[in-house]
Length: 100
Image (cartoon, rainbow, N blue to C red):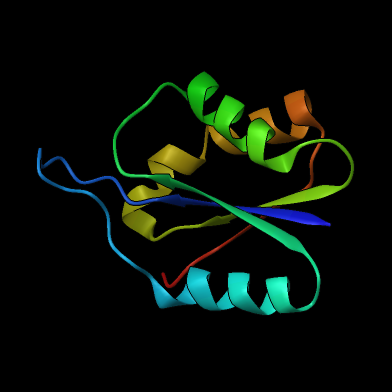
């Protein structure tokens, strides 16, 4: 199965390139070792939800896939419009969680 992590890491600072987060990396490593294909959409800039959806679709490919959103409460605004798009337009189940 393909698992695509979506990690919104948006900070309004021109030099911001994102950060490495052990939680997503650890989950991805364990899934990879178990034979799953893992991808990451790391959102470090504001972008149109349609563009994010295209990025998710490209990584998910054909066949069964799960789209897992990992986010903190301050990034919730980036996730809310994406979940129904992933479910309705791509037909993939979603999972959401994070540290708070």
